Length: 120
Image (cartoon, one colour):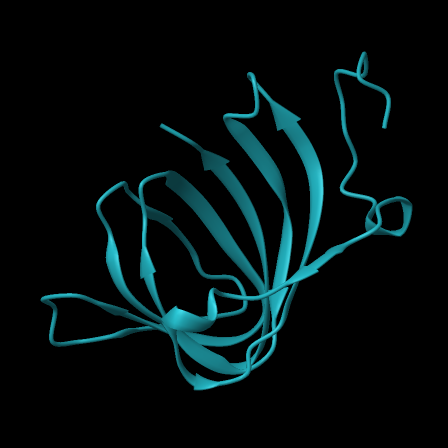
């Protein structure tokens, strides 16, 4: 990646994805595995943008960071702590998770999303 470029394509063929998954202590269903294509990392490592993909499963989440997401494919359900109605996320849905958000992220069908994260 050209660090001097002012316009960046989300060309995933030029990026080696990072394999991972949620912390095993947080997993409550399945064996979810993820891949992350980090397209941009700026501001002393406090800003990240890229594409994330996960296989089915469910895990507890707690956000210290701010995150914008847009679902590219798949189906996920986000269960927010203290809320009765979960949010079903499908292709084309966009949303923001603010610091302090907690709950369960459940991937029903392998899900791919664009993301921008701002760390505290």
